[in-house]
Figure 1 (cartoon, rainbow, N blue to C red):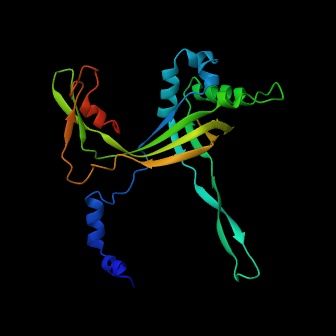
Figure 2: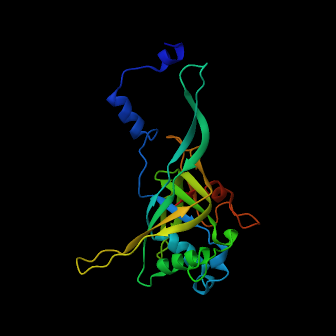
Figure 3: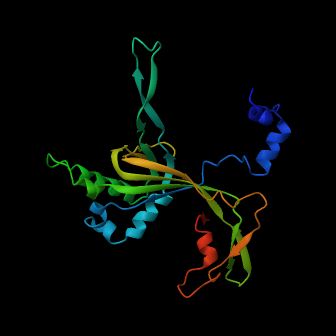
Length: 252
């Protein structure tokens, strides 16, 4: 056994595990804190009337009504190498493969999300002619942000009664950025005369590649002092606050 391994080796300890979790070093991630940023493809923002009228609404709708997000897995395809003179065969890495991004949306009573993806998919591959759209016009970039509680940044605001309140912001701890994403599979919607439920449907996205980054982890130790920001914190001539720039990875 190497000296390094002997240094780190120790019996499992429940007390040590509990201390690691309670102090935040190994705090489990929560499944319900995330954000979806879908940047509109050219085919929609320049040709679809109800999206052209209010692009901000389209952006927010995709984020707030994303009920479930499944990040794709990743695997490496191997290549087996075998020769009579080398003995047992072995494998080496050949190429990288990944699955599809899957997002389930809650649709509103105006069927906005259904219209959104119907138009998008019709631009990608219209059903009235035997050809597809221009690739660069129907792809977009898509970002999934994973938030966690307990950042050292708090927001100071005023109530209607001019009382000061403070709200601790969440921290973005992980970001997945998908390049060249487009929807290729839109699930159906189910209706019934049984108990009332929310109407949902899933959309699967193809993408060229994705990148994963762990962010916001530096400077977030268990003893990091709290900082407070508000609408005028460090406001300079450019109208941008230094303290707010430092807190760019945080949100409610």
